[in-house]
Image (cartoon, rainbow, N blue to C red; front, side, top):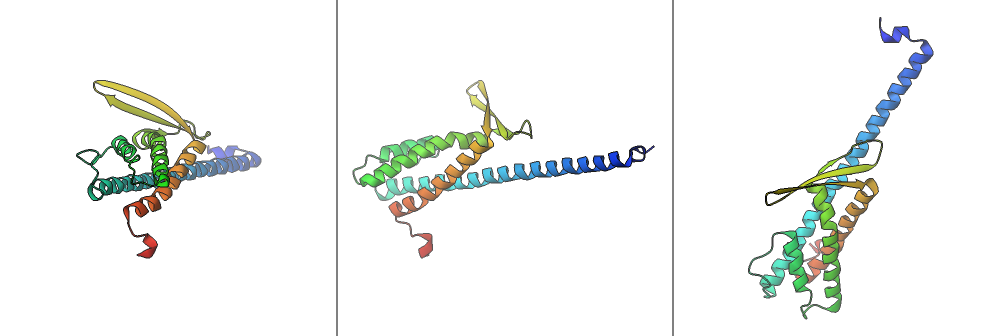
Length: 187
């Protein structure tokens, strides 16, 4: 016999209500997950812009200013940050420009590990009733595998994504002004 035929009308209505509640909670959980993943996608785009601006600054400094810090242009982020660190003391920078370069370099270094963990790790949520996200990272070091399990709260993820967004918007006009690129509003 069918389950609903054996239930009393009140219990049947309550069951229908609870099924609806569960479905709405599942939909809300999915919407939350999508919003977080969209934020991480936006962070990835912003970070690509940050690295592109760093590349432009380094290329400008080495080719147009004529100061060669190393024979090749750096590709890895740590090398780019090291390059900018070596650019900072140049006496051709104003004090304000030197301070801004220093602040930008430190902020990129601070946020780079967070970004690296989220992008190159496996992000998952063990329990959908919490706002904690777990990242599983494998790092190959020669013949050794280093495994790390990290936990980020939703607030921590969103705070760092926002910091990357703000950093991108701080860097863009500064680097464009230093390099001499036209401002997009003047195009």
